[in-house]
Length: 122
Image (cartoon, rainbow, N blue to C red; front, side, top):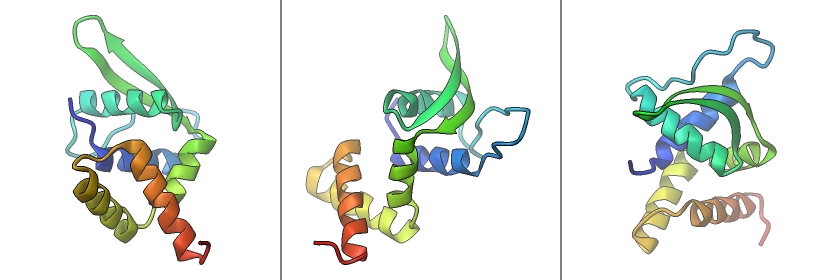
C-alpha cells in the first residue's frame, strides 16, 4: 500500500470533527475509501504520533477497521498548518515537484514555513 497524504489529511479532519461527548465510537470512514485502506492509514497516523485510535486487525488480512479516540497535540498542530485547501494543494505540488515524492517530515516543514510566512514571521 502506498501512503496517501490526502487521505491522511482527511482522516485528521474527520477525527477533529468527531464529537468528544458522544458515548458510541463509530469506525472512521471516508466515503469511497475501503475500510482496510482507512485502517492502514490510521495505523500510520498512530505510529506518527498524530492520532490515538484502536486499529482492529485479523491474522489473515491485517488492519480491517479503525475506531478513533482522539488527535494528539502533534495531530492538532499538523492539521492547523494543513487545514487550508489552497495551501495544502500548493504544498503537495511544490514538495512533490522538488523532491519527487512527498515525505511527511518535509511536507510538515514546508507547511510550517508557509504558516510562518502567512503571518509575517521570517
